[in-house]
Length: 70
Image 1: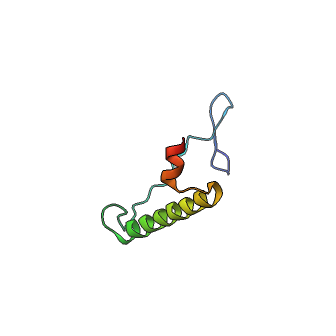
Image 2 (image 1 turned 45 degrees about the vertical axis):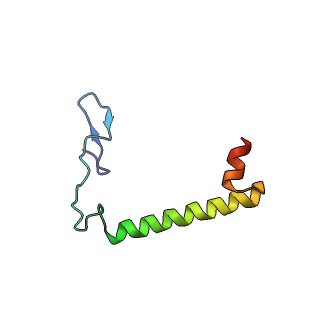
Image 3 (image 1 turned 90 degrees about the vertical axis):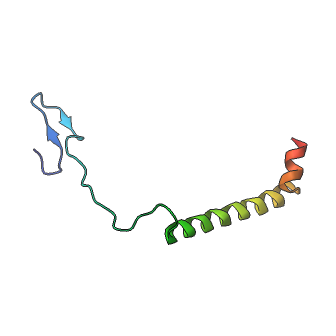
């Protein structure tokens, strides 16, 4: 076994995936109605709103106007 954590098998081939990754348990759940979910939803809403503003600035039309011309 080498110092980098890689393992050489009996044929002399390097096996980088022989060591299991360290597992941990997160104390704070990230599902359901949590403050993390609210922050994530707010950030995604801001990204969507800015994207719509950029679309309108670039195309000169709003979203519905752009969709009806396609």
